[in-house]
Image (cartoon, one colour):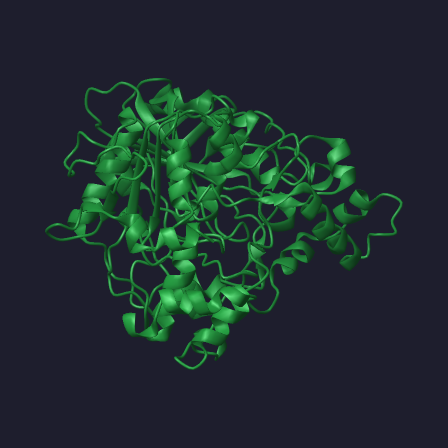
Length: 535
């Protein structure tokens, strides 16, 4: 959301804020409906009661792991003790600690936040076991929650079960210290451990909701897309899913290394007054969660250093031994069918936030100085490749540069090496979301910016003014692609136009409304990728 973009790089975190939706199948696999209209399902932890609507059933706020508090802070998630009686799963659980949005306290949420939400269709026809789609939310690894995404339309139109997941954020999800590494395998990657625990919960409980535990698709956008990348590479995620969708998260961009994370977190320890403690981790565990959330707020956006997201997965430890791109190149990543894509104008919202909303609008006069600040001696060559005369404004020219370059850490050209590497060993369907719904921020036209595809898959209140409704036909086609892929590993077979599998050097599918809006496009040429790949 625009009001919560206090991330320390030029990374837009446009997260959809949504309501809940959900349901389970007809009375099979241990489910049952009471005369009051509620629905009861027996999970591995106990009975839960959801809410029945006309065409779907909702189970909200299901705790998939024990609260990571006290001695469990910076530990892999532990099982939630089984409960007696019937647990009411009728409202979302707490979000994980994070900065509050407009009109909220500075810090919101609770460490007792490892919840997920399940939505299933009613009257789904002859299919006995439905595919399960598990959504990892975006938000720069600093904000967001699974409950912000209303999956009802995806579920009812696509005949799938959807699960949305909370995972630990910020320092609480990504802290890496020698003492933590000595204490377990997940130092720096506790959020990854959470996601794996949620996937194990899905494997244990999918059948109770009418889902197929051997037909699970993980998908996510932005930080959620990078979460998918991490799970593709992580040994502990192997076998927990059978397909994956990456929306605006080039797995070819590297995560922070263990050495870098340790340098970062040593400064954190000193800032919290724990560096001289006999037991550093014990000292940190006495601090309130709000102290760690405050560390995510630098008070201003910085444009450099590159890839300086405050918190992200750490590569090089036991939980994530290699960078995701390395595993795709070597063939050690999970070999599952993939949908991989980005948005045509990813970085317009980030440029607007980093410059115009800071009172420093991009102009013809400062275009080259900004390029020099970002790229040093390469600035003149970049300005020649992206001349101001070719764009409606200096703002759009700079946005095109940073989008095409794609290292901050999202954008266009890093997607091609990802597509190439992944397609060597598994089916890949590559796309670019190109629908321009007239989104504006501070009067600036954003085009198909980061996060603008989310209303096409989910319902909710999105942080745009005014929020344009998605084009119904394009939304229906995208839901058909995404859910048909979940059913079969191939997005074709529904109502949408044919989507060919990706091959290196070929065009990819452009997604936009109107006649000819869904068509193959020369992605590499459109984004000057030969220029960037030469540098």
